[in-house]
Image 1 (cartoon, one colour):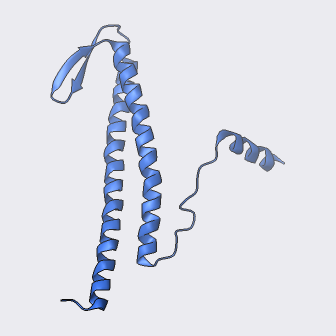
Image 2 (image 1 turned 90 degrees about the vertical axis):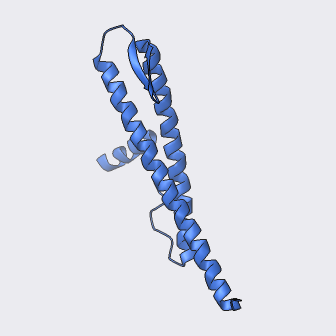
Image 3 (image 1 turned 45 degrees about the vertical axis):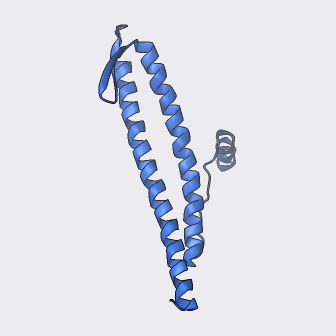
Length: 132
């Protein structure tokens, strides 16, 4: 039987380890999705270079299927948009998980970690201000 102090330390270590595991899992999912997004980008580029209206061969798992050129391009673009949304969602979740991990470890919150990029209107306003 563990002493209450040892039990608390063990519980703390388990909590920190679980949070760290979630962060690493999220990062790996982002890398995997980004790899797939890059493959889709390569496929779209190949379709743009191929101007022939004939059908194209598309790999689905271990099968190759002949599909119409426009339909294939549309399908890849939809998949690309879905991957972009998933990656953005995972990145937002990652920020929260890293903050919880730092909080559990007793470290100070990261400065500038929750920044968002400027949108088009904000960027135009900044350029106008800088021009004077």
